[in-house]
Image (cartoon, rainbow, N blue to C red; front, side, top):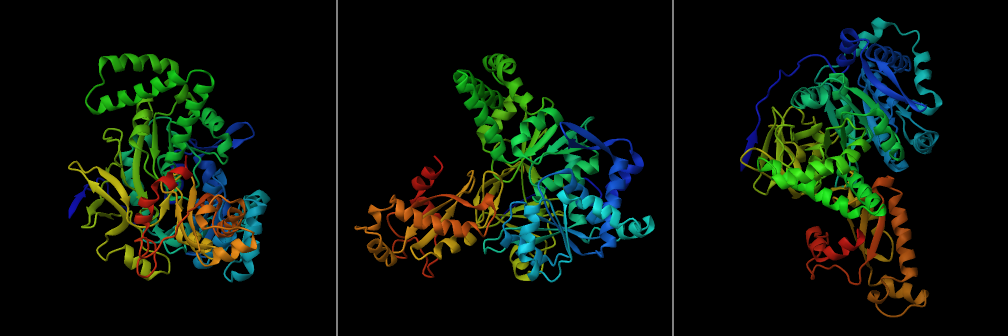
Length: 595
């Protein structure tokens, strides 16, 4: 059993909570710009002092509404300034934030609100409010629904007008590092999302070491970042809190369609993204160059950037590569950096593997992508490549105070102050994931080299992580698809891919009946592309997709000519799918879905 640990470099706080950052910023640097929020075509600055006033006003409204210390308050919205404002206001009121993805289905929203016992929810749009309204009669604990687009911030501010500063301060200082800060629901292999209990102490530990190690990102003069990933995801959330803590200017971009324009006007010094974003930037640039008749130039520039970065790993690129690199820096690379605002020199990537080629490409054009690894259960990062310690193709070394262990079966286990307190109201799942001595079972398989760099080599559990970083539990979709009479088996795929797809086999007993009714003859293998059969399976797919968000929905599927059996080796004696066997046998079918 291989083990590697990194010594702790900070003093772990034993008192206080995450709200202290906001109070300290207002006290020590009240006029410093904490946020820039989009107003029309411009960015409007919000100072540290102004943010404290806004947060306090909204928090007083929550107190006046009857929110008690420890109560759960849900938040469903796109990434926007109000998300951050409400997050801190909930903490100021002594409550616990329960993020909900804004794309979540009505069923998912109902489960999260019910399981968490949320007393209130702030929803962004009328559509979000209507989804909550559909299930509100079943939510006995839910007392309040506020809407951001219907002036929730102003409504709460007015509601709390009579709450005193002294009462709010008493409430704000209630939580300690041991108290719950947030419940983040993450997809499980059994289908039902589980609430990860993250404490104020988890975040304080994670940020204490991460901000210190990533000083070049957070604490350089003029540091700023533009958030565009969902703040319901722990990855974006940790950058939000880290920016507040370090007073790096923070902006929000809610619509991916406006992202390039927002980047160019905001001009961040660092960004965070999932691999899919880096892939799209590269592919868009390549396609545009080809359309303009400069495809060969771009291809040569890309190969040069990759060669330049690989040369850095060996000490120094060759003279010929350096010469070509200098030329392409003027012709190509500068334009790519300008697309990100022109000031961005670092990016943090997580959620799924980036791939060595893209990592070298971006470093070669002057944007070092620091790939890291972590889960919701670990308050985001466990490991990360650092500006002065990058090994492309790995997810970096464990952060200070963190240990990694490779179990006998290759599973990666981690221990550290950022590891969660367990799953909400689910002792069985907690016991399966978290050992009594603090070791957390990630479900991922990997290796650790002699320098402590971690490489992820596979997934032990069945949870799918798309190229966009979305966690998808296949069982939910597969169960719904299999409920259709014509379907025998369904295997959901999409790990590391841009979207979710499925392999479907047809029930041998149901098909003949369906075939006669539809005037068909011959075996299933003769009808895998038949429009009527595909239409029938599409109904099963549409029904399954109702249970999940758009990002988790099945977008493409293929009907296979044969079935999966125990005799064929695809099923266990208990008729469970052997995923690795099926994926190996149908590799070409899966590849065709994404080609």
